[in-house]
Image (cartoon, rainbow over all chains, first blue to last red; front, side, top):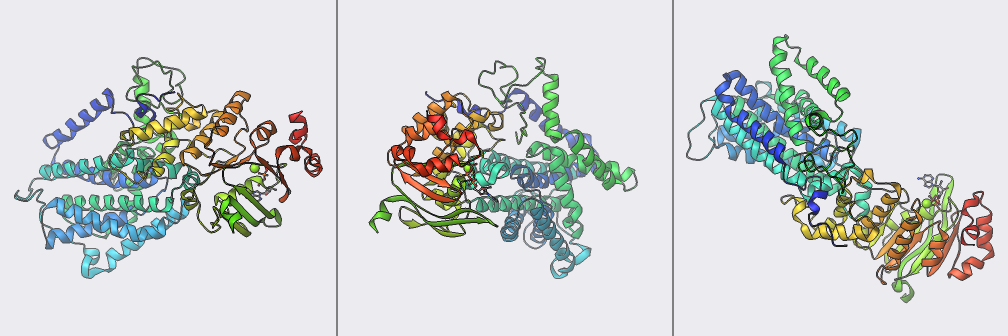
Length: 365
Length: 262
Ligand SMILES: Nc1ncnc2c1ncn2[C@@H]1O[C@H](COP(=O)(O)OP(=O)(O)OP(=O)(O)O)[C@@H](O)[C@H]1O
Ligand SMILES: [Mg+2]
């Protein structure tokens, strides 16, 4: 009874990405790299904002999808990060990564303190507490005017410098590249987390927290750590927002931002990182781009889209991708075998996809 | 108190009330280290409630729980696991959206103290994966590692339940009806597995399959309506009139072990 030589097959994220996944990512990379040559200034800064909100959506996904704790509080940490970065940029340094790092740390610290309260709750009470945290952050941004300048917001923020010794980025396209690189780095960090033993523990919390305790986990501490990381990530996203729009106001800390993050996380598909990115892109596109043509009915459209997705694609965009892949697979099967069935004689379709559905969310690939 | 220090588990006057209902009425028990102790009794006798009190998933209304002579009555569940007390659940409690291997790996990773690490992928911990697979093979789930736990049959879930508990490295193992819903072959394998557990592991077994109970147990405790009826060796329990009465008093004829063992 010697164990399977490659047991990584039996992990949800155990395998290296397959051919199609790599190709898809390569295509995305090419499109993202070419974008500044194809788009006008307004479009390119919309794309930058999509990346920023994508990171925010990923931080929401870490809690909502991976850990099973739907949150409406991420705008608070996003705001802490944005204001921290704005002040650092104005008073200390124009170097972007320093701003991002300090913003992430500040947001993580705030998340740690607020999280000690919030993570005692689960489900709807958790949602309510995070909502309250968001509201408190919003009123703090409005009323703590010695620091935030109230509803006027902080402006006059210098252009970002990507690395020491480089000059400031004057073109929207270059700022976009800076945001793209930072977002990619953050994405890879979260991806590593989701695949690690710690990521498995967070999924365990979502699946069956009581059982997790019964095998020795002080689950509260693990959840609080996840909450803190998600807060730090939202803070990093906030810093990137400041580099894009060189302005921050209480509107960036509001309920609508938190709702966008949660919607994007859900539209993307439970626990899926690429799904959260795509969901955020879709929400920003509808709200800021199509919505403006409709005379400010963006939010209405976003709401309608949300309802449609929840009803039509319970697995979200990530599930849709999975659906399409199976659709186009030349070897169609009527009933998928149970996840990675040992006898699975379908080398053509399984290498990049060890666990066909069975109610699974195809999380972060 | 020398007797207490040699007892792996000692319960003093445990009472559990659910509103009006008294599920356990002042039960005291002592289980020496390394013993295989079966706990039997009709439905609703309080067996699972007793386990939940030992494992810490439920606080007793009154009484004390000692493990290795140490009072753990107020310890949370996860600290009791650190102390070596691990339970399985009568109604399988698994991570249904993770794979079979990952279910065991969660317990293994905690014991190996890597559960907080987040930079290397779980797949990089090859020795832990191997160890998890070995445990799965022991309970009869070899080759099922890549299935989602939610795709397992009822009997297989019972097996996985045991593997997860073993992965937490118990010194006191509580098995709540592990054979319920298993096929005769699976039950046989479970019997062998329990018999093959290290001699210094204390095992408490709640089970309605009395063939299995009488085969495995060093001693048997009978609960009835939340009260401790008897604790004795297998032969004595089979002959005990009170025990027979307790069982005959139940409406559920399937529970009559005299039929099953005949
Ligand atoms: N959470 C609860 N709330 C209220 N009553 C409960 C609860 N859990 C158990 N009980 C009651 O306590 C009594 C003992 O239940 P318990 O589950 O311990 O019995 P058991 O001996 O394990 O029975 P079975 O053989 O059916 O598993 C039963 O009458 C049951 O209905
Ligand atoms: Mg029971």
